[in-house]
Image 1: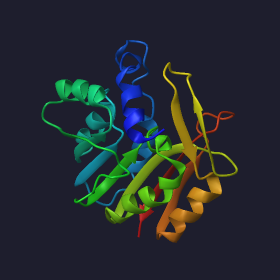
Image 2 (image 1 turned 180 degrees about the vertical axis):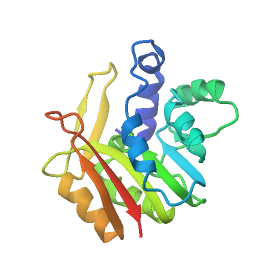
Image 3 (image 1 turned 90 degrees about the horizontal axis):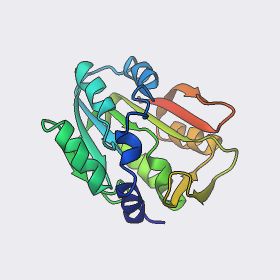
Amino acid sequence: MNPEQIGKAYDQITHLWTDEGFNMTNGIAQHKKAMSFAKHRGNALDIGCGCTGRFMELLVSEGFTPSGLDVSSEMLKIAREKHPDIHFIQGDICEYVLSEKYDFITAWDSIWHIPLSEQKQVLTKIVESLNEGGVFIFSFGGTEEPGAHKDDFMGPEVYYSSLGTNGFLNLLIELGCIIRHFEYDQYPELHTYLIVQKT
């Protein structure tokens, strides 16, 4: 599946994040930990921002100026209604040119949907768009080896890929990042997140 197809799948399931049953604290503690490493409070970017706005609100409260990027038009429609003062962009992170520099970037439960063949170039682009001392937090499937799969757990079929734990760690070290935190935060599930800082 390509990112455009992923966007269309997410267009069909916005209710999963707008229903009262969604846990709005999901990822908040992890983001607070990541923000504690940031040297500056300038521009921030939420890749795959979705529609809840919970990370936007946190970023604003912490002194950042956030913007959001998502491939789903329906997710962004809801996000813009909730937060009209925040800049949202519809785009595919594989193709979108990050023309600004950021002190903080998050890609929570998002870039695992990009093609496996695009993972390295997307992570490289993200790190290159960080200011010195900038922080990047993202979640991924903490598999032992690189791989990809599809499932229809949320309704429409969606695609997931991972470089594997060592693949992500090795790439980010090669890109000049310091690993600040690594955790299987929903163990024994493979949901994993990394906090890295650009030196």
